[in-house]
Structure formats: C-alpha cells, structure tokens
Length: 396
Image (cartoon, rainbow, N blue to C red; front, side, top):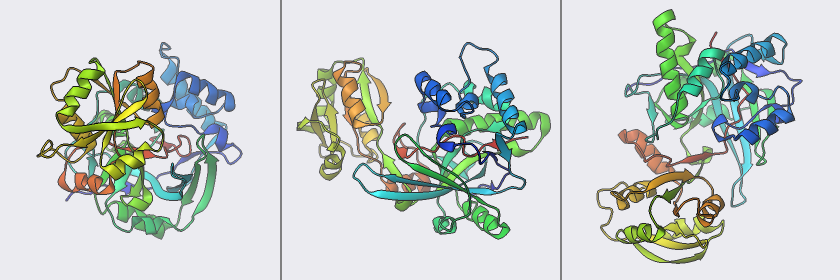
C-alpha cells in the first residue's frame, strides 16, 4: 500500500498586527464579484487581492498578484516562519440542528502523486472545470494559496492534534464559525504528526481541481528544476471519523426537460407521495424516511422512496440513484448546496426542478477509500469551509 509524504514547511502568515477577521476570506471558488469587492473594502490587504486577481480581461492580473504577495512579505504585512512547522486548524461552529461542535485538522505539505499511483486518493468523479486560472496564479505567485482538504485513514490522528500549540491567530467568519490556527514547532510532535498522516492513504474531500493543478505545476517545475517544494502541496488533513466531519448534501437542479417529464421518469424508480410545502427541516425527515424529495415550482415537495429492485446493482447513494433513474433523459444537471436556495431557484423558473438528497455517511466515504471507488460528482459538501489567508505555503 502506497502512503504519502506529509511534511512541515516555513509558512507565510499575516503579521500579528493584522486583523484576521478582515484580512482572511472564504475559498475563491465560492466568491462572486460583489463578494470580492466587499472583502477588499473591509481590508486593503485582504487575501483576495492575491487569491482572486482581476479583472478577468487584465492580462497582467497574475503578475500583479505576485507583486502584491512579494510586497506584503517585504513590508511585513505577512511574515515567513523561520523554521518549518505544522499548523493546527480548529473550527468551532453550531450545526443546523443547534449542536455546538469543534473539529481539528493539521495544515502541512502533502505529497503530489501521479493519478492512479495511490497514496492520495480522489473520492468522487469531478465535473469539467477550467483549470488555467489556478495554474496561472500558482506559476506567477510561486505559492500554494489555499489548501486541499484531505481525510486521513489513520486511526488516532485526532488525539495527536488535540493538545493546544502556539497561538497564531483567530477569526470569525460570516456564519459565526470561529477559525483558530496554532503553530507546532516541537520536533517530536512534528515527527509524530508527520508519521501518522504518512502511515495511511489520504482521501481528497475538497479541492480535487487544486490537487490536479499541483500535479501539472509539479511536472512543469521538475522538467526545468528537478525535484523541489513543488513535489508537495498545501493540505489540511483531518481524521476520517464522524467527530471531525460535518457533511451536508449537494442537491440536484434540472433543466432542459419539463417538470412533468422529470417527475414521470422518476416515478419508474421511486414511489411518489406528497411532501407538502418545503422548509429547512425537511432534510432530517428525509433521513428518517430514507427518501429523496422532488421540488416543484410551487415550492412543494414530493417524496421519492425507492421501489423494490429499482436499484439492484446500483451503489446505495442518492446521487447514483438519480443518475440511474434519469439515464437517457435529455436534461442538464446542476448542483446546489442549501435547501432554501434550491427551492428559490425552482420557484423562480431558473431551473425546471430540483431534487433534495441526503448527506453522504462516513461509512460510505470510508468504503470509497477502502475499495478504490468513486462517488458521483458533488456527492459531499464538507462544512464549515476553511478560510484562505491564514496560512500560505511559499514554493521558493
């Protein structure tokens, strides 16, 4: 069994004088143009100045991002660690059902392996996505700006991360999630953490495209410069256990076929019954019923309960069931997190119909790793999202 390298590095961090509440940001791929403008107005050195360079028609935007990052370091807006370290990353948050939770993972440099080589494993099929933006930004800045999210199969990793380390900053995001980072410099603890993550494969939970970019960048740099820091990439790694994960569903949106046709096709594989007007609590009832829910333009739902034998030979995942049930139907599929957003989009006519699905369980995620399987695209939505800017990994 191949296992990955996981190493400390000299992190680039905002100086202690910088307000992280104002300078850190959500991941680049969830930000609108308005979001970026709002973040820049909050702090002139917000990380989006580098991580989301623009406008798109500016041919120098990546060079400008690199210039800004270098200026931040030379002026001590950001400061590079003197020695390699790991960074503990804690999140404290309240779930939809009102339970307060705390999770912890570790930021380090995870080995970039060839596709199919083992050690670092994908967990779902990815949808086509333009990759030149992140690649061009990496080339220009020579840095990993935001982490891949990995799940370690090593039992007991969490126990190595529980003890506090040197505080390096804290911020609270728009959803009230408290993000805290702590630097680990003790050589013995660094060795223990590195050995634990490196003892088992790591499953990519979020950031498949970023990891693919790291592979392309590694190959480019190796061709010119041989082996180096580009052989690894910035990653947050947490243990694959229920206590350390909060998983929401990513629901399905359908367009290109009328609602009546979609409903009729689904009726071949599911028993249909009225679910009434949809509210935010419906996902809990879905889990209890073992059902999906079809969303109509009038904001009402229809329970979708699998017919006996309809999914024999199909993996027991809601996304896989829907792919099977609608196979051959000319329909465009979209993906959306959040029950309310799905209902609003269907009611507004932006899409023909929506189907609410249940969150994927820990057992299915582990089965994916153990059996080398791939889930359908957008099967899992890991929350809360990590903040960008708390740790940057320079590659030079």
